[in-house]
Image (cartoon, rainbow over all chains, first blue to last red; front, side, top):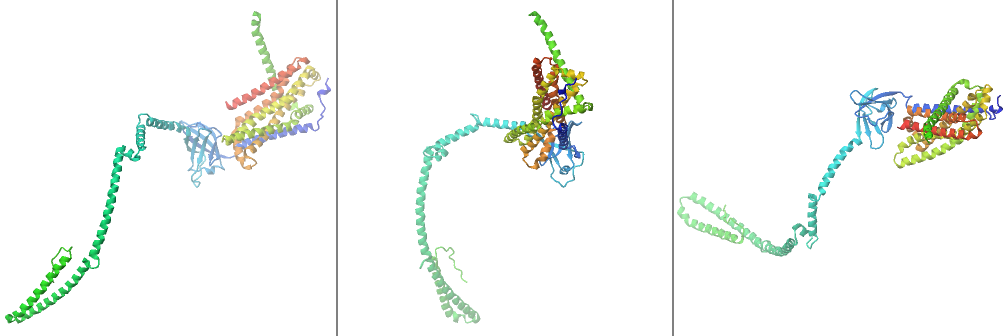
Length: 326
Length: 265
């Protein structure tokens, strides 16, 4: 016997429709989700293969991105160990993104202390020919954690140096002690001078020497003032009105006149000599004239000698007292 | 005293055997329900009505409320994760964390727990009472297979409910995750797709599907088997309900734990 309540009448309107609607909604969501997952994982994209060879594939995971300028242009598809012991990282690059990879591109793997490993591509010249399908390239790795042992080693060396420098008997502390002694001395009466010269007594000597130098400089100043005055006087004597120079100028004018006279006398003598030569025979008759002429020449010469002596007396600086006659 | 010591191992072994047999019945019933759910012969006209009713009661009625609730919870969680990640300078991991925590773990578990609380306990009580009152025997005598007519529709209803609630609120959570991380700008779509593709590799996607299926089955199968094992005494009905619900929670936690272990260990 079938109980009536075991088959409840359909009290809810369109219950089957609603159930189907809900099922359809759920299936559509699941289908959409699966399609989106496939799209997101690049199932619908046509790709080309790129093989990167690295010494160490630590940190590289399947599904990881290959980035170019921060944008994902490829995805790690497989990682395998090659016959030569190197890691081969097989990357699928969608064809629409493959244009960023050129034959000159460089691929690097960076491992940070925190966070994931990154595989990056750098294309310097985008005019180069594009990377062919199935290309095998070297993966350069820059590893932050590999730097640490080296860093620690150099830091240790540095610390040892510091330790040596800061030890009680080190040169640095001795130098500092010396500096301290010097500065102690500098605090005294004579300041830095005492510090430099090694004591107050020496500094006092220097101060005394300076004082005396000052006095000396003062007297030197006076002396130079006196010298100034003397030079001024000498100037007046030599170059001033009726000074040495003035007199000399006058004497030279006289000398010029005297020399003119002498020239005239010599010309006359020359004429006379010519006449004497021409005449020849009447020498004796001309002797009286000659004697007079001679007396005249002698007088002129004496005048010159006297003048030269006079000049020599008035011209103190002349060395060559010889006077050359023309 | 001596007799007790001698008897204890025997009792323990007996209890263990009973426990094993009970779990075996759960598995057997689950497998049977699964096979029947996927065989077209199950869905004759009467059964379709019953199944539609079950789906309506367990899924349709609660879908708006549950979606609203999980959207609110999701928004709060997404906000917390995004702000915390930003304050640690790890914004690039915020989306991945939100999707992993919310869509992969919390939403399916919440959906399963919600259906278990609302429908699992109801099914447990109902089937226990029907079992105690001998309705199934009556049906068998009338030539109707109670498994096919009453129990499998409930299993299907619960499984569909878990699946529908999880997928709708998962989609809402993804939408809120996008808005939470990128705002209303459409330019985050590429990044979102990339992160999404990273998270949902084959293993994770299959794991999620399997987990949802197991959740959906467990929510109906375990209470129903517990009900069918109950002694036919009305005063013992609460014990059967209690045992079914405890077992259900245990199984849900185990499934979740196992999925986490497989994924992250």
